[in-house]
Amino acid sequence: MSGRLEVLLSASRIAERTEELAVQIGRDYADRKILVVSVLKGSFIFLADLVRKLRVPVQIDFLRVASYGAATESTGMVQFRMDVDAPVTGRHVLIVEDILDTGLTLDYLKRHLQSGQPASLRTCALLDKKGRRRVPFEADYVGFSIDDQFVVGYGLDFDECYRNLPDVCILHQG
Ligand code: IMP
Ligand code: MG
Image 1 (cartoon, helix red, strand yellow):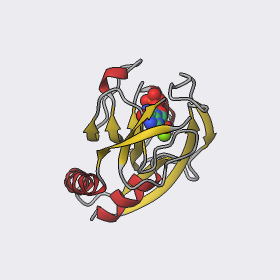
Image 2 (cartoon, rainbow, N blue to C red; image 1 turned 135 degrees about the horizontal axis):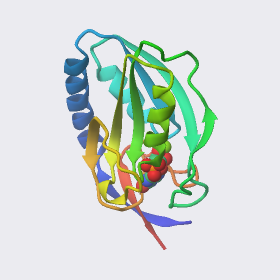
Image 3 (cartoon, rainbow, N blue to C red; image 1 turned 60 degrees about the horizontal axis):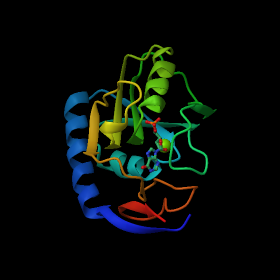
């Protein structure tokens, strides 16, 4: 698909908001050590920026899921591709995701990690398309609420392209 790109959130706006989130997270966790769990692939750039702004002790792990093929609509089925390396038991886990859409991915991941009995479990999403939920889900930390438009850049892809764009852009199809 070829499409026209329109900047929705500039790199500088994202950086400002990420700083605010980091301050809020730092305050909430005080001097507890956080296990930040990045949901690959989409969150890799947000994760890298967020953790460098955090002033609390941080450990980082990754997991990977896929719910989209080469499409802009979720298949509605979350496929687990890779789990975290180490048990989350007794740890303060913060899941970091690029975008919260139907809610299926984070709902699934929260249940999955909860079964490992962490000391606490919260979620942080850079973007939130609130109007699209298929399961009720609220993230504890949200960067921006956005309308129901397909966005790419700053880690987010369409068919594995556009992840490297510095801004979050609307992909106009056609
Ligand atoms: P959910 O399970 O429907 O909440 O979707 C979460 C996943 O869908 C995200 O991690 C993204 O990978 C993908 N996704 C949802 N909306 C978009 C979008 O607008 N652009 C790119 N990926 C998206
Ligand atoms: Mg994703």
